[in-house]
Length: 459
Image 1 (cartoon, one colour):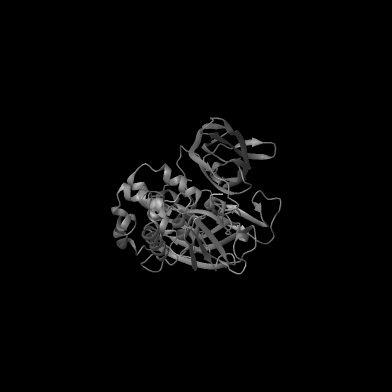
Image 2 (cartoon, rainbow, N blue to C red; image 1 turned 60 degrees about the horizontal axis):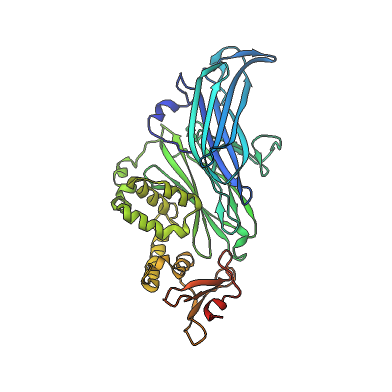
């Protein structure tokens, strides 16, 4: 969700999260989870503050009632996938509107096929339709690929129950009750951030190696203030990841919570992140003075030109998620591209406690190696098949060369002993101009052609 946090929210939040008198107190968020090769499982979370809503007499007492309207429209076909109303009701203790304080929350779920959609969410008091709120978004649905490791969106929650769980609860999933926080706001009166996510396709990895899952919390200046790492075992299609972060010692600010799944074979990071706001007036922000020279403007990306931004993204596209690929393509300003690259590398920093970004340094060394060794007359080394493999997996443990002869064009075989118990890549100069193409590999998810030799033998 495109949430914009600023310090005027401090005036609105306080301890009770008050809302404007002329706008319904309604918040909305969503998270996407794996379903199948063509669709995702989309969960919508809503929160409704009944303050200032009209109380009326129902069959069983005094009530309030809101209507939640959702439209999901395909931006290519202009067809509606969903255009529907939901009724949200609750009882109140008395007819006095001042007594209506409980926040109403809920979740709606859909299986949504791959496409780019416009999303409109509108909620209003059924007894006073002018008391409403509207939220507009662009919704990109990209199914999880079965041949790649992946992380779902992160769902922020007010609580996650692991005992005495009600399986009939609307918040029930995977043996848990995940009570969502669609406002993405936490306060000093409830300073614990709960989170839920899912990790996919871990069985693709070598069963003898474990993933490293990094949990990092950044403040608004991009400084990591919390970091925790755990080991995740292999051998499962999907793994549920949930936990808590105690925010009580942190000052009022907007924060970014990042999960990074590190592939032990390639050191590649698979990233998911979520922004939220924390109101904590009792803690002084001692980092305020240091924020002037931090962030994207104080980084190398603050001086990048548009061409330099585009060039770097070409270099990192192999390790970008589908969501990041689509996001960068949609950026239309230099400022946005600089911020994207800044966050792209920051989210992959394997050790935020150091001044260097070791992950970025290692990757850019691979780019330099590819350009030095594989650049041809028609393309730079990082854009070639051999360059791509180096960027993803590093230099091979063994590289065997086979020069051309009267019957076979030149080819070479690369061996990686630490990936999936040992894999190889076979490249051949099919055209005869030094542009070695990937003909075959035993690595999962890569090109497979057991009859690769025919492409370079001329038979």
